[in-house]
Image (cartoon, rainbow, N blue to C red; front, side, top):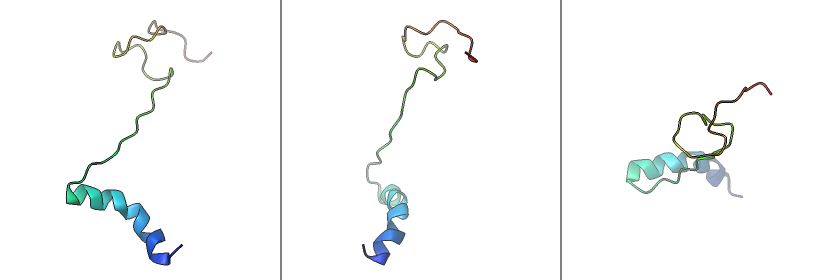
Length: 52
């Protein structure tokens, strides 16, 4: 790999924002999220003890 590419890779998302290009965002949803909020209709929406 060329040395210039290694330095440029972390800056690429910032350059895309500055140029107005689309940005990809990845959101991971787990059953440990704030499942009591009512945002999603998970079967575990009832409150539960978190330390089990």
